[in-house]
Amino acid sequence: MGRDNPTTRAHLQLRALRREYPGWNIMRIRENGLEVWRAVPHFTITKPMEEAGVKSVIRAPDCQTLTPALSCQQHLAHMFRAAPASPEGR
Image (cartoon, rainbow, N blue to C red; front, side):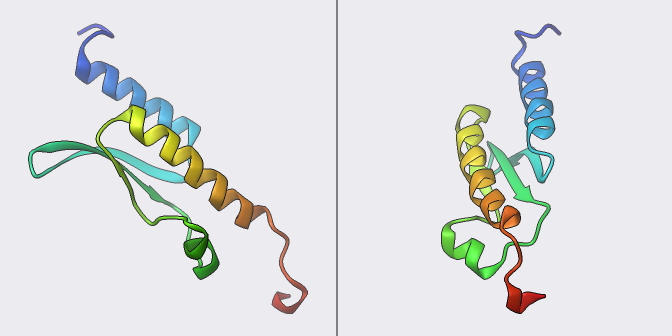
């Protein structure tokens, strides 16, 4: 099977996404007979993160749809993880 094979291409895309977003469990599954690309964060989503739009599960019909959604979620999550702890929380 060459790179033009849809299954091979999907496996290569999955591997690339996993390298690009190591903080997420990214998988290709079947739900109700349809292929679904899914990403679940390895980190805990706090209430403020949830209120800002960070999702506990991202679902998409393909890699091309999942990639920008995952990029957006990664950006949102990173803003919270990069923020220093408040003085009250120390």
